[in-house]
Length: 312
Image (cartoon, rainbow, N blue to C red):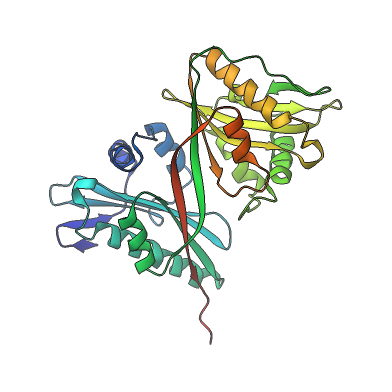
């Protein structure tokens, strides 16, 4: 689709390095530092329909100046992300990308005959992005903090509650147990959608997956009581999910898992640990992360627009 000074098109795998560079430039501008590596793009794209749910914008010199994707989280919820190169902002690239996202959401609504909730993620510090979404009829629904800890000294060993042990995930053995623990631990979180088992374990099939960084806490009977599912990169250890099953909460297990993650990361030579947390999390996770010394780096806003089925 052509626009004045740029065009939207579908990407190919050959575009992945340029997309990674573009997102890193936008992260640096909006968040203060890049928050992506090429493996992240390739991992995401491995489960995306590049011909339907991903767009890039390129200028007249074929340089990428915009990027967006839509992920079908469930039958009802669609999640999206987009960014525009700072030097190309203000010429309509963001407007074109949001319009493409909404058009795709409408098509998916029409195909399924079911109302969709289209969500978009933007840095809270970007009023222009907020104004763009609000102009399309989106409204803010939730805020998430990105928190980080720099391990300047060797962390103290984890202190596990009596009767619990921690071990690494074993591929081919632990998928079902971790899946069930994940559903129970996160079922009371905002906007939680139960993923299909196959989708949940897709990440364990990626070439970059390292089971060493999926830490499982087991009770006296060997059942998974809690977990810290992490991924290591060159720049940081990112805690993707930290959860404790309801019967085991209030005993310090989440704190012990964090301590275990910090010690393991430091031992591996990675002193930068990061995670994202719902600022209104009902389990008190934000307070826990503050307690262990983690500090907020930035905030992300989630905007949402309802795409209803037309009334006949």
